[in-house]
Length: 288
View 1 (cartoon, rainbow, N blue to C red):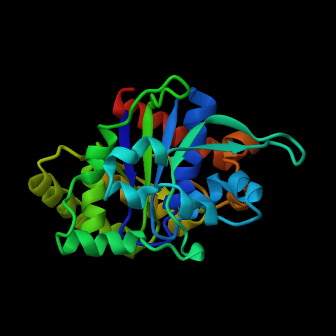
View 2: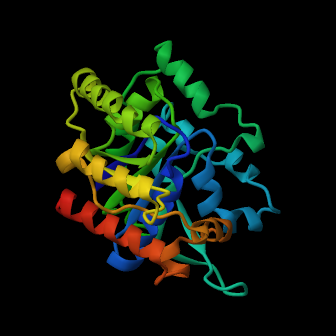
View 3: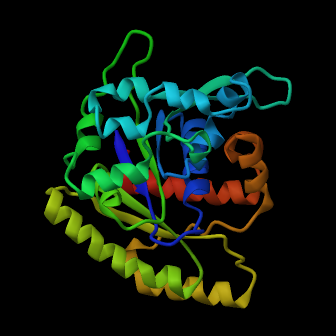
C-alpha cells in the first residue's frame, strides 16, 4: 500500500477536493483499491464520502460517536480494522448506493461534539501522554478477513493546514507527500518551509518519507498572471513540479455536494481530465 499525504501548510489550496477526486480517478479509471484517511479535525472528507451513512442515520453523523474513528487509533492502534468504512454512493437520484472501491477511516465532525477530537490528540502528543508513531503501528496491524481483504493499493491522507506535532506524526506514517498549491506567493513560498519540515520528520522519526511532487490548483490558465506564474513554478520546483494544473471549475462543487467524485459524474469534464493527468503522474512516480 502506497501511503500519500496530501498536505499544504496553507488553507484553501484544494487538499480535500484533491483527495476526494484522486481517490475517484484511482478507483474508477485504474481499478485501484483506495483507503482514504481523514486527518483533518474539520472532517470534511468524512462528510463527503459518508453521505449515504448520514442519510441512513437520520441526517446526522452522530453514529461516528459510537464507532472507532481515526482519533481512537492514537490510543488503540489495534482497532484499525474497526475504523474502516465503505464509501458507498449512488450515481443517480433514485439509484441504490454501491461500494465502488473507496474505503475511509473517518474523523469525527465537530458538529457531533466528540469527546476526543484530533486537536485533543495533538495536545496528548505534545505532552507525551501518548507515544508518537501510533498511526504507523496501526497501518501495520490491518488484518485481512474473509468478508473484506483490506488489500489497498493506495492510501490517501487528507490534512488540515496545520504545522504541529500531530501533522508531523501523521506525515511520518506516509511514504510520500503530495503538495497542492494555489497560484499565489504565499502558497508557493510556503513550499520551502515544507521541505525543511520533511527533513526534520525524517531525522526524528527515522522514516524515508519523501516529496512526491507539487502541483497547481484552482487555476485560470487563460489569464496572463496564472500562465506566467505556472512557467515560473516549473523553473523553481524543477523535477518536483507536476505539470497537471487543476483548473477552477464549479463542477467540483457539484460533485462534492453529491458526495460522488468527478470520475463517476463528470467523466469528460475538463477538470476531470486535469485530475486524470495528475493521477497518471502519481502512478508513474510511485511505480505502481
